[in-house]
Length: 444
Image (tube, rainbow, N blue to C red; front, side, top):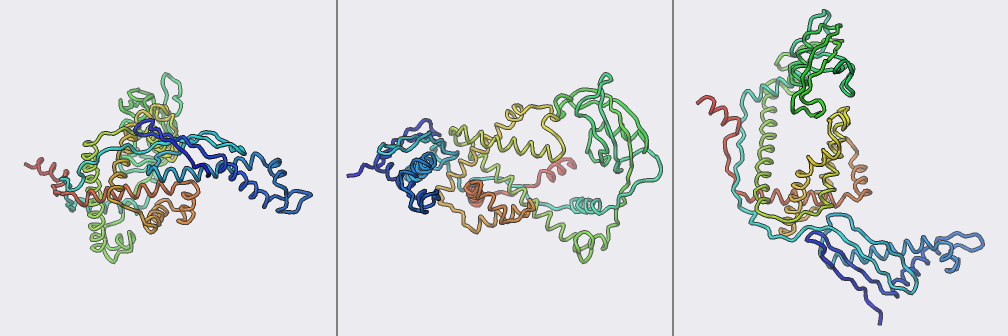
């Protein structure tokens, strides 16, 4: 009678489990024989016909490859079977001990993984929550129209050498000095900015406004105490600048022609109607998202469970990488913030822990509600993503498949479904928008 596979399960912590596996010698030997046969069918060795190479030659020539492939295949098969029996979903990659098959000997190895902790879900249906109503004012519409005008404005350099003013687009070169020495990293050439829109420090804009086009100047600049670059925060430096070009924007008139240029609308009324609908929809989505987050935060406050450390670290790593990438896209480096990688990690860790806790909670809701993600929903996700990043949807999906990221996408969509279910069952009370309430108080 053949021996059966044996394994023992040890719960290292509420979020980590270790499995010790023992594969019978007969099965281990059979796996080696199967691997040898596979190599034998493909081997092309001088002096032997293809597929007719003796097993002993294969074992001698390709011992490392045969043992490696046979071991990996056997471990993968058993891990899949064991995980199915345990009914646990790893949140991190499996940590498998080193092991190698040997003819006539049992194969013993261990693997461990992090998983969601066991906890009791609170009552998540029928929760009461307030959500801001949407009120579209004439001022909101006019604000959007003004943005449209700015986007379609003609920008041209001026011919005189006057000083810059609010609304002007200026091109400047600047460098900061302290005690006569240039401060590393605080320099830029042909930096373009629009004055009066808060794109730069108020002191810097004030200095720029004193220098005519084609001229140079300098003055003292004090960085705010909460400036993003902590090395510069609160410091007063001498800023030397050169204003190269001053450009002015000529805004198009608000008429039917503007509507046609903005989006091929029939006339101005049609454009205003489209703006109203789009603005209302975007605010509805924003307010719903805010209410949904408050709802989930309320539920999370009612539960307490340990978080898997490796999963938190993985989430933190993704967040830090995204932060660094965003800096690089803006032409900045991590050093320009005056913070180290360790500083950024300390700042972001609470948010990473919050995200992991939310994911675990929503995954538990999805499991209880037996929610599932269809292939069509997966395809829809990749279509939306492809339009956002401007990449081919087929290539984008293949990248996720090749890098083992499909489960991550599925889990995200499952969590989204769970969040939608919680919101759909909630008792939502519409309240006046915060800005409207503030305005009412101001006129009382």
